[in-house]
Each structure stands twice: as C-alpha cells, then as structure tokens.
Length: 441
Image 1 (cartoon, rainbow, N blue to C red):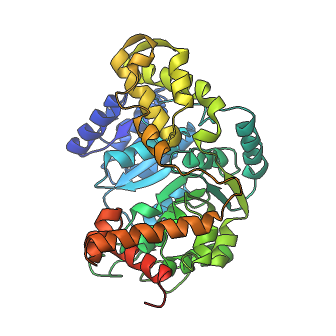
Image 2: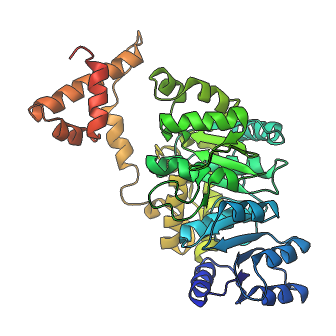
Image 3: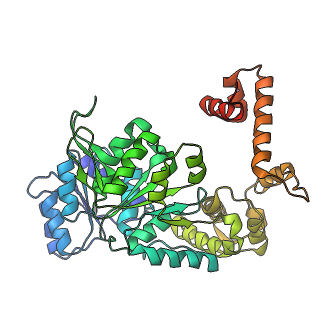
C-alpha cells in the first residue's frame, strides 16, 4: 500500500511497483490508509509519507504495527530527530525525497528479507544454493548469527557477499530491525562521513537541513559496509571508534551519539595486503575481522553450477513469462569450463539472457551467447607455464609489472598520462606503482 498525498509521487511509486510485478493499493492520506486496515486490508508492506493531512505517518505506523505490517516512511523533511523517532517507533526503514528507483528497490529487498529485487512480493528469505562446501558456510552463518560479533565477508565481486550479510541479519536477534546496506566504494570520499554518520544543519556549505546517517538509520539493526576496503584512511579512524566505543559524532555536532547497530563488512580486496602497504589500518582490520566468512569464486565450485543454472532458469521464467523447461548437458559442460570472472552474478545474467531469447523449450549449445568462452580461450593462451621447480610468484608478478610499465613509458616517451592509458590505470595509480618499484628515482 502506498500512502502519499502528492499525486505525482503517488503515481510514480505505483508505476514502478506495478512494473515490478506487485499489486498496489494507493491512497491519498493517512486516515484512508487506517480505515482500509481497519476494514481488513493486509498489505505485505506500506510505503507512507510522514507529513499528511488528517492522519500523518506516525498514526499510520501505529496502525501498521497493530497488524504486524512493516512500514517504510518517505518524507521530504528528513531530520535526525524524525529518523530516530520513526525507527525507534518501529518503522522498517526511512528514506527521503527525492528518491530513485534503485532506492525503492533496495527498500523492498530489505523489507521482504531478500536481495534487492522487486520481482516478487513475498519470500522465505535469501538462499545460498550449493553443495557440501556451501553447507559448511551456512553452518558458520548459523553459529554466529545470534551474536553481535562483527563479521567480515570476503570474496571476489559477484560471489554473493550481500546475500550472506542479509542471511546473517535475518537469522539474528536483530531481524526485526532495519538492514542498511552501504556501498562504501560508490560514495565520494568528501561525502562518506556525512553518509555514514549524518550531519547537522549548517555543518558545511550546502547543508541546508539535518540528515540522518546510515549508522543512525541502522539503530537496533544491522549496517552492512560493502567494499569496506575502499574507505579512505581519515574515515577509517571514525569507523574504528564506532567499533571500539559504540559512539560516533554527527558532522556539526559536538556531543557523541551512541550506536546500537551490528556491523557486517565485506570486501573483494586483500585487506592484509593493504595493511602491509599502509593503506588500511591494522587495528580496524582486526576489529572488523572478528569472524571471517570467505565466499569461494564460482570456478572453485563448478559442481554447484547445475543447481545454480536450474535456479536462475526458473527465476527468469517467472520474471519474464517464459517457459524454458530444461538445459542440455552440453550447456552445463560449457558453463563448467568457463572462467566466470563475474562469478554468480555473471552466470545469472547469462542464463537470464538465454531464457529471454529462447522463450520456451530447452537451452542448447546453440543458445549460448555468440562470444561465450572466447575470452577464456584468449587468456588461456597467455598464461605462462609453471616451471617444474616452481617459482617465486610475488617476485614474478612484480617483475612482469615492472617490465610492462617500462614498455609503456618507453612507447610513450616517458609520458605518464599516456602510459597509464595504455596500462588501463589512473595516472595516480601508475605514479604509486613507480614509487614502489623504483624507490630511488
């Protein structure tokens, strides 16, 4: 149910939700929403404006709680105080106008206890699909879920780190609280502290109103810090304080605030290596890594591919109205031999594409994408042979890197900008590598 007095915003929400396959009831004020609930309407989720005539979002929240219906508050007048009040009163989440479709999609994922997708309105929660190795992972999740221990989930991009984070939240004593996901790598460095900890009105130029940070929005729930390895060093200090003292400071305020949010972090980076290179604080690393859950790449669990393909085929059928009934053994064999640099995310995309184009019947080798496997074949030709006596991998990689950088600089006559482009690097990254490889120059 959408409760919104602004007709344009109400229409926008209804359009998006219906395109996502959801049945939507839209009303223009809080009193109508309360009356509908009194008459027996039981939506799976309520999206409600805060400031409305007759009955505001607070009264709608009280009615929703009475019927155990999750409610997300939407408002254009976000303040720290309003966020705290609504979350402590039982709101499932709190988002501000203007919002994007991606924000609504994420909210739906949080409310329904599944990865951020708006294709289904009900779910038993996120699932990890796999054999014995994945079952061991699930045992670890169950063992630590009911604690407040900080968990670090590691693994390559696309392996399902957020899925596991949501599983930890859903199995914890905080499951009734919010799950707030933050992609630390997607937020500009200058805005990261404001996003995490919030800011007061006038805290900096352009801060025309107070804003609640993600730690405050995650109160009595879980905050998921994805790509935590991308947090710059100055912000790492403040994150360390939250983990050590359970307090943080809102930008522009002098009084510390208490934090009651469990922290789950994830990264595809090697944090130990970053610590050695002084790019990540060692004390923060150990605070985050109380419990580590490593997700294996898809190439290390090829036996799970048939199960995953069947799952993604069924999901694509349901999502796009297709009737693909099976997958040939040749396709499974091709999948098992593929490199899957994008891991499970890449596999899901390939299966979905094949199902959409096939429409019905059985997926065969002829349905594979045109260039499928070509990149793997080209890369395999370039892989050097391991000598019988072995080698020093770290030194070999360093020597190769130095040789390629030297060739790029020679070809560009010492122009570092041009050399960085040849190597697919930022200029600053190339300069850092040169300092490391040639410290005396």
